[in-house]
Length: 93
Image (cartoon, rainbow, N blue to C red; front, side, top):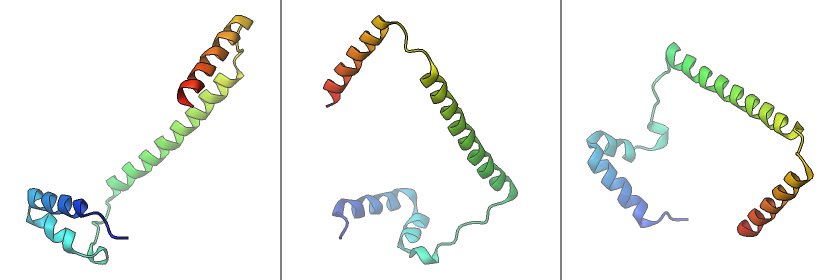
């Protein structure tokens, strides 16, 4: 499948705006591009980001479990929440 023409125009304009180095990088094939080696500080940052992502997922799981375990409330609260849910589904559906 051939990409739309406007994608090529955007790449050409961005290469012209960003400078001559970008234009030559766009012309290279992907196999010729070499990425810089990561130092110890970059690796540390990557591992910290990964660890924080897992902590965030675990905290989200904890909060979901905590909310699900809560009492739904009185009969009137359940009735109101059911009406709100029905209205939301009617709007979305």
